[in-house]
Image (cartoon, rainbow, N blue to C red; front, side, top):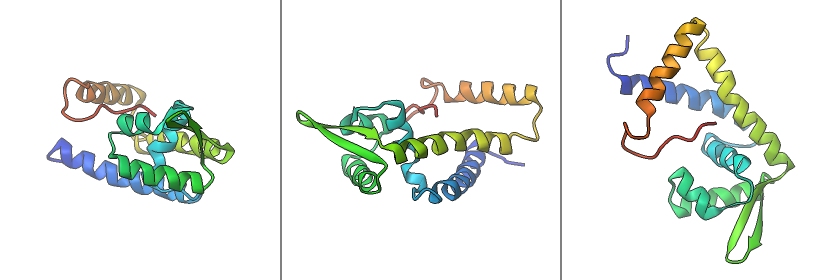
Length: 143
């Protein structure tokens, strides 16, 4: 039995990271690119500045990851004035579908021992904990 919520979160995060990495590695992606692909897929034409702000990353890390995704054929960057607009390529759209699906597959696997009522209750309680006003730090973006 877990004694703290933070420990349970840490264990779940590590397991989710491992599960997701196994799926994304098949596409040539890493766990670190997951939220880049999802954000750009949900916000086509966003700028790198918008992406950096939304994901709460430093500019250098975001720049390196974006360039890596462009070189890998997952993103396109088109100059628009002083900014670059980011969109998913065909390969990136396939990665977006796989990245998005991994959340549902993980939930199905991890929540399998729970009844539908328990799942609903767990998600409601987690939503309460994750309320952006209840926790310090950046708000979570939904997949």
